Image 1 (cartoon, helix red, strand yellow):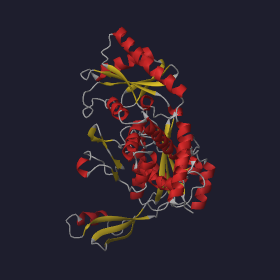
Image 2: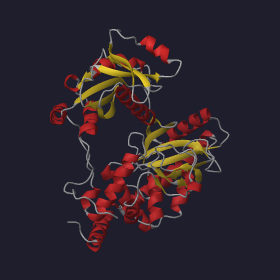
Image 3: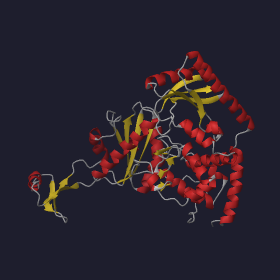
Image 4: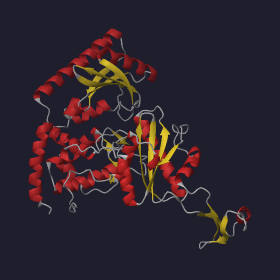
Length: 473
């Protein structure tokens, strides 16, 4: 039975107060973090002076600056900002050199451009080079807006709102949809803080979200950023750059998960919603048991993994997955679903089909009967041709057609022949495509078991016991 609104609201308030207290950083941690931030900026200024660096300023931004962090995901984002007329090559050279001067155990990482990951006074630090632009609507690099975001949010977030933001972050982490990385396709910290700011609280955001339908537009049509993709999930213009959609990384699936979960939480609040519920891999033996019950077939495609950063790799992997699925459907294989995963050295795509073989006959559609090229079609498919099983004939819609025999009916042989001809994305076009096998014969690796969980273990990421259908808003 669904609790009444008053009862559920009182329980939600009690739960959120208890969870917020646990998520709040201790006074000792905040003091240590404050000292580290000050010390880090001072160390950067001293190192820049020693090097005669063209550094304009150093800025600490992000959740560590605004104290909206979750304790187990605390790191410091240090932005090293240089003159806008500096070349990209010099920016990388100076930024990385300066970062190495102040960080312990620095390692080079890559996103849109190189940055450093290291430590300072016991805290993990990302030192990111950027340009000190004067207008966030005209950045030279993707990180140039971040200092402006820091100023915008810091001026508007009250101490009470900080706790609401932490609640929202932890709730989305429990659902597995927090993080704007290409692998996650979830809510960025900046997007989530803007949403909590707009709706006043964590619960205010959920009350709004429970009535959303995908796609969600939170700006008037005349103020929407230009060039939105057809599959956009949520539209919220950056308050500092109206031409940018803050929710670009968010997928429709993850937004839909939040919408239905908002309804369920408001009806059935509980502390378990804020706990992490990682889904483990699905062993091959378990997947085969599922397939026996489902009466379906899974084929496994393994590709060589190119040397790419995750934010480039995962979109290309999903593109390759779509290309394989689309080709199988065009070839009249009955695809049910698909999933993909990556591991060191290889990429894995798993496809579930209703049957491992397609029919031995395919209709080959020709032109309308009255067109000049109808003669060419009839010449290509004459009666008596060995692989013509029926036809030529005219279909109900007035087109010519034949029914021809398909030589390759099994999905694995078909894919082995087709993969070299498919466009799987710029960075996957030259990869080894020899690894195609039915699941029963495929090697059981971490990427295979991860992809199998995504393929055959679909369920709402809710706490155990929350099975009631949420009420209407």
